[in-house]
Image (cartoon, rainbow, N blue to C red; front, side, top):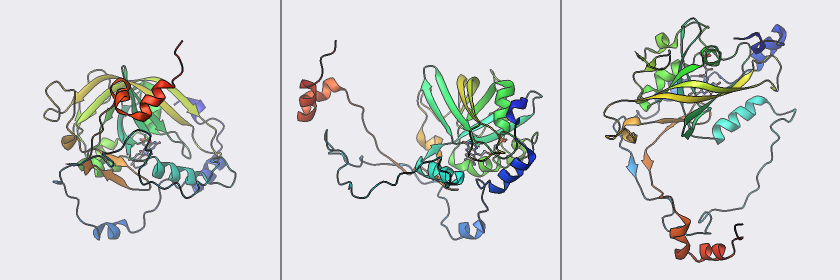
Amino acid sequence: MSSSATAAVSEAETAAAQKNYQIVQDSGNFDETQAKRPDFDHSKPIEVTKSPNPNWDYGQGVPGASLAGNHHEIDPYASDRPMINNYRLLVSGIAPRPVGFLSTVNAQGEKNLSPFSYFQVIDHDPPMFIVGFSSRPSRVKDTYRNLRETGECVINTVSENMIEAVNATSIDAPYGVSEWDVSGLHEAPSTTVKPSRVAESVFNIEGKVIDIKEFTDHQQPGMSLAATVLIKATRFWVKEGTANEDYSHIDLEKLRPVGQLGGISYGRIGSTFEQPRKRWSDEVGKSEILAKLDAAKPVDK
Ligand SMILES: Cc1cc2nc3c(=O)[nH]c(=O)nc-3n(C[C@H](O)[C@H](O)[C@H](O)COP(=O)(O)O)c2cc1C
């Protein structure tokens, strides 16, 4: 970690920030709550249904949706708005989020494994990914530190049956403690980067850091910097038996992805539907609205 990551953060500020840091909350007696819930059905198949409004036509908006009720305006930077409210609002409102499970090593080769849901694939040509590392009191996230030191990672997918082990890796283990040991997940060798792949994952993506953008304008002093990292894939690995013959499509029944929701909730996919993408040239003759819009379109110079 370069000194810039912790520069200008005093111990007193860090201590104060630590007091206010509520991202990882005490979940009370969660075991008791969980005991009252039905068991997870591992054998539940994914059902395919019709889409929500199969007779939808151009210009119809959202059939049956009400526009009654106002939206409440929020300034995320308002002095009386605690940062934790923005965190809770964002993770509950931008959901589900895929979980990118990152394997990294530091310059000494010490291993790290942690989940991140400020994560997304953002292009396929070239294959690109983005990961967001939040600020916290004291040091930057170890994964970020490793990415900055070595520029390499493996992004691993998270299937339903992996979630307890994956969640265990998010513990605030001291720097240098390997979450591989904490979780009991298994390593598989990579070819283009040093960090190992997670053998239990259906899909692993070896990748190299292309760009980093750091942010320090936090609401509360004493926080580490936050960072967004752009990663370009260097190799794909797909578990045999989970994809089609040419490895161009992973079977959802095999992937069984989890999505992170608000609070400590996760979602699984129990049902899907399809929506074919349309071409203007095919559709314009079938719809009065599209025909009118087409006739009124500005002339392309
Ligand atoms: C499912 C899940 C998703 C998470 N997503 C993020 C994220 O997007 N960004 C982040 O900074 N922390 C995220 N966290 C918290 C980190 O995993 C946690 O801070 C972890 O200790 C970081 O590990 P590291 O310091 O070894 O990199 C997430 C935790 C879980 C369980």
